Image (cartoon, rainbow over all chains, first blue to last red):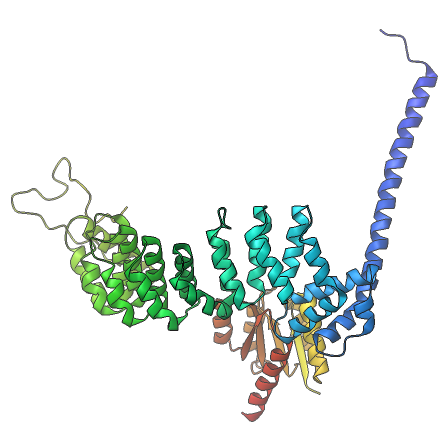
Length: 384
Length: 125
């Protein structure tokens, strides 16, 4: 056994440990007190600035104190303004943006978008999106197309979508041609956020590059922009599969019967299966009974999604479409399987009990199903 | 003075709406959740309620349903406040008897106009 440590060493260790523990506890208490103090100060600053910001948002005269506030009061004022900008639109948003412009906030944020730190550029971009000003929009457009950091470009894209500016639509669409573009879903979301303001730019880009045309067609359909249907028909008729499919999907969303002819033409067996599948779905959305026969002809298409979408479209059309499905369901093979699946799904969606599959027609000279050792693909068991 | 009850769990929305309504001459009460809204209306029925749909606890639609099933509040005008992506809630709100809806982000001036319009329609019936 080692000899016991000197008493002095032990005492020193205990005292040092106690001092350390006491220091940590005191430090935690001091930090807590400091947080409470700062939180109280922040609350008081916001309580003082909030009535002025509310008055400004309502179009009343802006108190000079609101414009001149600096330090804690200035930060409180801007926190409240940005919190309100997220929640309002129209003239209140304009009034609040004017407050920020007069305070020099816009200029400061634009400077921050030049920061070497990506998170600062992104944060400034996010705030600029809430301020509907030409200066803010200009800088955001530069970030969308020119910032080296993909995260900053994504934030700037979203922010540009919030500006409500018609010119922003063209910037967003052209950003798709960049070597490392922002994901298309984010660009689409930003364009949808612009809403009706984006429509002129979108319609113009139906004659643009491949990516622009596909995106423009897609968003015009989502915006339910009926007047754009003729431009969409033109895009459905020629060009890349991507563009034509987007245009066809948009025509489906618009639901115009006058688009049936051009969309049906895309069902032709010589067309790409991706396009044919999109066309089948679109015809279901349009819901015109004239599409029933062309769709029925697609039920035995060798490409799964063409046949599947044709069957679902026939179910959506109802009436003549259901007649075609019932006829097909009584047959054999893939067409029957897709038809039965569509009928069963329709019944389930309506809270009905799906009809029992009809017995498969047995060619002469062959044993009935279930009697042969290998029955082949099980008719009536639905598609894949 | 015409009384309006503003029901929203977002204090900033409540501040904006309350300020604009008071500026327009309404007497405004506030509730930050469904239970508080039910208590406020039980105390005194307001002339109109601005009701947020998405709230923690009892949702705006549940509150509306309860009011419509109570004779004392069945005819109380209600305008829903709903986010852009909640269009299904708007349909359900109308089924339950809401008078109008406002989508967020909202224009405070437009909101006051809708409040005035709903109250005028009710008075002329």
